[in-house]
Amino acid sequence: MTADLALHAAVGLLPVLCFLAAMRFFDSYKLVHLRPTLLMIGAGAAGAIASYWIAGAVMGASDVEFHFYSRYIAPPVEELLKGAVIAWLVARHRVAFLVDAAICGFAVGAGFAMFENLFYLRLLPDAPLGVWVVRGFGTAIMHGGATGLFAVLGLILSERAGRPGPGAFGPGLLLAAAIHSAYNHFFFSPVLAAVGILLVLPPLALVVFARSEATLEQWLESGFDADTQLLELINSGRFGDSRVGRYLTSLRARFDGPVVADLLCYLRTRTELALRAKGMLMLRESGFEAAPDEATRGRFDELEYLEKSIGPTGLLAIKPFLHMSRKDLWQLYQIGR
Image (cartoon, rainbow, N blue to C red):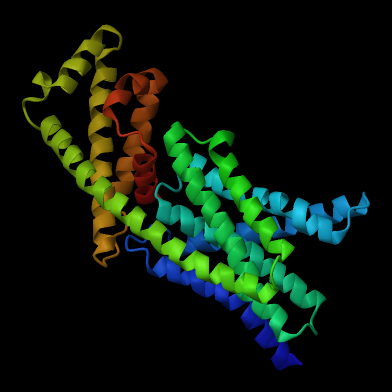
């Protein structure tokens, strides 16, 4: 019995972990580190615990049957719980590219599925091996894939809208819930449903990775050149004659001299850190691990001091010359953590 239980646990848990490990392996730029991945798995497991509490409360307080709940109520509830983690990551600029969105989404779904399979393993220890094959290769991959699609679509729509919000995450939530609900209906046999998930998800993941890496390479190339030119201009003796220099000079009518000087220092520090972050990504893509040194962390302390000195109005005034896209905010987070 112990050997059978171990086999059932392995079949129920390992496929989704292997798929997640493969996603991280094929991430050339290593955008998502191991510790955040483990945290996402834990967040997914916490979502599964919350979903079971909600299910018990709903079915205990109503005449809703389990089959109806699993097909029509559980999918939107569970996808909302998993998606909330991703929405928070996007809103906090913790993800910026399709590939890290997909990895984080799949990790959250994997954590949810692993807790769910462990729960059923404890509840149904004598279930045949076929049950765990379906749950491991079908249900678990479905959970990870649905949340991964939610993350990718939510990021795309957030960038188009300029900010995350219900309108950006709503379509992804509907899609994830629809996939989840369709899977729970078992229109075909559970084995065929699991095979369908395996046939659809890996090719889709390859498309996401290919598109994301192409976008990342383009962003690195164009951003690196722009940051280099701006830094060279700041450090040259011709900065006062440039468009940025003339703009900063014009701000003296609204700000004190020291504040204008801090604005220039802030612009230079942000640009230096942006270049450093892009350089780290390039090193990772080449197989080298680059970690921030103490000098770099000191630059972040300087940046924080300058932000307080400049104030919200000063930051707003210099915003046209800052890289404030989601990807640029993300790169500063990556290098500073």
